[in-house]
Length: 502
Image 1 (cartoon, rainbow, N blue to C red):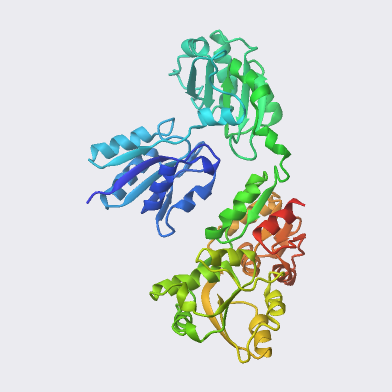
Image 2 (cartoon, rainbow, N blue to C red):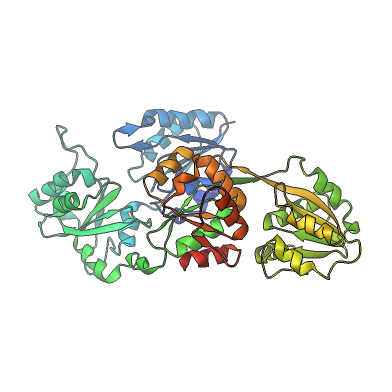
């Protein structure tokens, strides 16, 4: 059977501007064929086991010719695969989606177009410049700025463009600005016409240069503005003074800071969202992956079969809760199987995860670490208490040791395992060497250990601020030669974010 191809627009840069349908398509993908994306986090919506094929194109540097990309889509669809062709912006706005669709049709292969938000309208909007405004502009044109000025004959109808449209938006035109502006003026556009150059539109590093048609090329060179950027021409540029909003976000406490989040990808979104809402640009490089324990849950399953024997079940992480209940349900049981057992949670996040299963923890210590549980349990254990401790495969032994000293019998079982995630260590090392990362966040000891493993040396973090979720993580950092700048007083994501802001 023939597969299905989705020609999907990924939007202009801010990954949150992707459409719901695009996300749905990515979730179904067997193969993702993608260009250079403004934010690779878009790929996280696709299955980890999908095949990822990079075909990105930069100026004069093509990973794969367009004709070969077209044929690749055909070949993968003929294999019966669900293929997502992911493009920045919109597939049909200088995205060459039409060429890909035509070859699919010639081969009688089904496809759908999933429009994306084009930078032609979104980037000006983020700069506070509407491409139309009833009192100022009733028409606009989107123009490629990438036409080679040295070729024999231009396909551009400058005599119509220059004066026939109120607002002109040139995509990929920064390098050709001298040619573009001279052609506009030659064909009647006044040199005094307001203009703007917007770089990295919709992203935290967005910068807007206000100029005129006559001065644009000189001003861009003077300010060192490089691609990616768009060039917009027209009286609507004047409205920026009243309508700019994105620039006002610079007042947020973390604006302009590039922060590395090392948490597992499945859990990073909460921390990422909070940091982004405070103005930070977040780079997600997961240092850990949550996976099955080595014994494939044998010990946990055995304990679940004997739940009625336990006086207490103690959870030391939200991950432990999730994996425990996943195995409980796998065994055909639910929370009722806990019987009269009391429940302890190491902190508020773990307690919140328990509430999702209809359970309120009997004990949540004031200090969210093993020492806190030990203190909170004093005087609460019956004689010869039997305790189940489902937790990460590698964890500190202080909790079970102290509980045993208190006379309890403790069964420690592996509910999950954290392993070093596959990451592009070379790219991250380059970012660190170039001083492009302001801060690194650590949410567990394993994120510290694995990040050092990924980059090869803790010395690369010299000069970069480090923020740890609590003292245990901070101690691990210190043991590896990293002196934490920030240690959260409340050992939660909210506490970490608050400490970073302060």
